Length: 514
Image 1: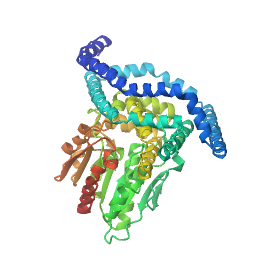
Image 2: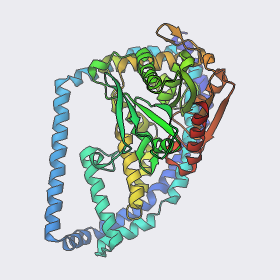
Image 3: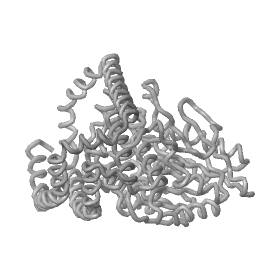
Image 4: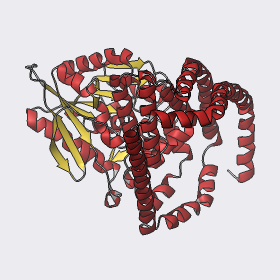
């Protein structure tokens, strides 16, 4: 297709989205105006009361407390300076500037790649994203109404006038702590990550290969019959999301139901690990863990729970080694990139080759900031909600909030060659859905999957869309296969209390197939 024809098709398809753009622009103006109007009033008020606030704060703080605050603040800036200088030294030592320049030289190749893609597919993606954004505008308007701006104004007026009751004291302490954290770690952080306890259920490493580890959790003593299961998690973040805190722990729930839980940990890859391939992760990684569990329990098949990217790995492994898998649960796992979501964004827009060739491994924060950049207004809503409830949230809820904050920002580099094949062959070429992906010389046919399947997806998931996850049920040969929609988004299965019933359904599924 020559350039003229490409542009003509693109122009024709663009007309279909003009109405969406116009509506989105109008909606954004209305929503963000209503979002910031209350804050403008509060800021105007605070500006007038500024001198009084400073005077009252100084009067309320005892000398010893003031000294402590000064020392803490000084420490924050010292740590911040150390971190910035350390990053600059690392950049200089690895010649990162040259790497960025190399990345920029890929612009011509990126244009050529874009021209080679079917315009209808690209436009379908953009139309899907625009529809998603318009839906978000409605959600933001509703969420904004839930935020009690009047309460925030009352708290700050009390601070300004020196009315330091218990609620105001709690608000002030948490507010100052959050600001210190942001100065030290960055604006996306709310809690000191090193001070937040996660993954507290007792476990031990029972299998290792390079950076890969397999954890075995201490079974519940009160349960006589223990049935083994293997949870295969993603490479993007840390696996302790499955055992976040005692009140939000899928692992502990499974243990209480008599299941013997194993969990994968793909580690923190170094530059030397950049050549690890998808084939190795499937055959040596998932395969090695499955074989270990089988040996330990004297069994021939293990039930798998694949979460997110781990769901794709589990699905591929099952298609290749159905004789070793007793049952499969996929949890928010994509099968195709043609149905929208973040997987589509990376498949159609990301310069995968340029990133891998430049950095070796895919930088952890590149993935994190992709999520933020696609929907930055979610961060605004989160910021507002957090600071509007600082004095109201109880210690248990704060524990969960801080743990989530730590996990969201605890990102991991992804081995470059793994990512290259994972994105290009599995998703860009739609290889998993089409049956053209090969692992160690064997084609991956989802029709080879015959074991019981429980496919769980979020009804409002914009990272892995329902359509992308649901396709799996159409492609497998399992006689027992269940589609299980759940309310909410990508992590709703873990954080929404209403979805705890699904935890019971997963445990029952495993108990039946073991």
